Amino acid sequence: MRRPSFSGFMLWAGLLFIYLPMVILVVYSFNDSRLVTVWGGWSVRWYAGLLDNRQLLGALGRSLQIALCTAVAAVALGTLAAFVLTRIPRFRGRSLFGGLVTAPLVMPEVITGLSLLLLFVAMAQVVGWPAERGLTTIWIAHTTFCTSYVAVIVSARLRELDLSIEEAAMDLGARPWKVFLLITMPMIAPSLGAGGMLSFALSLDDLVLASFVSGPGATTLPMEIFSAVRLGVKPDINAVASLILLAVSLFTFLAWFFMRRSEARRRRALQQIHEDEQRQPAGR
Amino acid sequence: MKRLRQLFPGRQLVVGIPFVWLLLFFLLPFAIVLKISFSEAAVAIPPYTEIFTYVDQQLKILANLNNYVFLGQDALYLSAYLGSLKIATVGTLLCLLIGYPMAYAIARASKEMQTVCLLLIMMPTWTAILIRVYAWMGILGNNGLLNGLLQGLGLIDEPLRILNTDLAVYIGVVYAYLPFMVLPLYANLVKHDPSLLEAAADLGAHPLASFWRITVPLSRNGIVAGCMLVFIPVVGEFVIPELLGGPETLMIGKVLWQEFFNNRDWPVAAALAVVMLAILLVPIILLNRNQARELEGRL
Image (cartoon, rainbow over all chains, first blue to last red; front, side):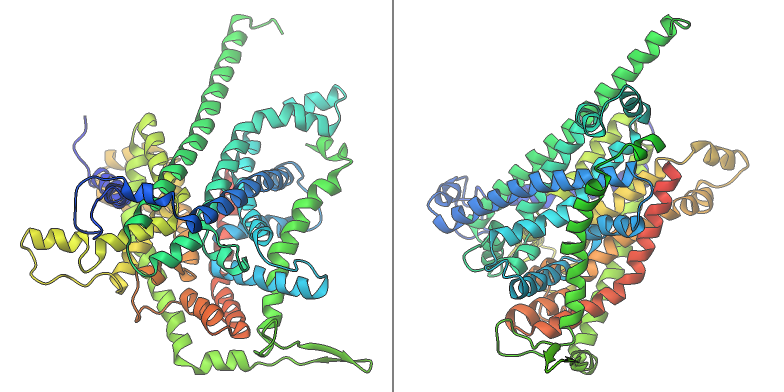
């Protein structure tokens, strides 16, 4: 159709650069050889071996638990934050609030992790809570950082919404909470789903924050993997890594799919309205 | 809009909950970091001294600047900051050079292709960075796949030492952060009006000239956003230098981690974080302003 361009070449080369290492990792997780770089035929024995690794399974359980709680809390808080950012134009400290919502997105994790740990230590001294660091403190750290992601996704959606629908409901006497639950929520539901899945994935993946704020016995999956990986490449870690890659890709794909489907549905609905209007121009 | 605002009885609550959470778990911790950076390391739980003491109706503040003096005197920390800045700068430029053409190509593609490409770019940003960095360890190692391939082809006799060098860190940085460059650039480039380039072409401008004089200046906001989104986190990066870098790769995130976990010197780690934050303040403000402008432009 067109002559091949430099930018087109770079796009494909870039995508190859991004995906090739992951493909190689997955392929080599099926390598029968104990030497990770020598191909010894196909095998699933590293996957089978994972089932006996109690330490790893325990860490996985904890990680899933944290990720689930994080997703729920981050969606709730992030939606509130997005609502505030898009629907309440003026209140005291608004610019500070805006900064607080977006800053965790770029803040280096070592800084956030260290500062949260020092907060928890100080809180334990002053109010006696948290007496012990562990799953709860990791959950708080993850929720804080995922809230920003949810807020960004949801506020983008809220900004696109037609305010007149909400105002119409208000004019008809609905209470604000009712408007939010019955009108706004259903319209932003797909982005809530996307935000929740993203939070789940981010929480499942986090190493640095969890390492800082966790306590004895609360090792998460990334921490477990990291301590193994530090010593070099190992076939069973290849298998775990491939499984995580698969799980997270599935989640992100679903998140994307939900967003896209709702987009398509909305476009169709708009088109429908447009057609109806053309059919009966003076009918309203 | 006005009506919405007036009719909001629970407004305080709606604003309050996320606000208090962020103040408590994001802003307050920085104040504590600042405080502890002025204390002394001690063999205690927690391992630092109090700087506020209240004895005999006297409030004593014992702020000690030793940690900062110590950072200034020890060449290790200075070279770690410089090393971080160097790797972040070069890594950001590499991402820009590779990411710009990619974003440009996506923005010029058909609508269907755009969504597919965006998904392909976005997916890795949501996937485990630890694992993606780990994948490179198997490729770049001395008896890794890359060396195996090159030796198998007879291009080299001795394995190249790539893993545990700065080169590997650059590869890791570009690999992990490329999507953060491409996405804002794409969001900017896709809004450009192609008729501008057509007009330039009609007036006899060479495509390269019109690219350089029209497309690049117009995409300034996207370039700034992308560069900051890469630069800021890379300065504090820990996983990539730890797994791919060698002993000579000094980066501040790694040093802070060691200071905290290995030496258990919390006050020095806090001082390191404060200085890092001070360095990043300008880029963070730049990014925030840029995003605010972008948002206003869209509204």
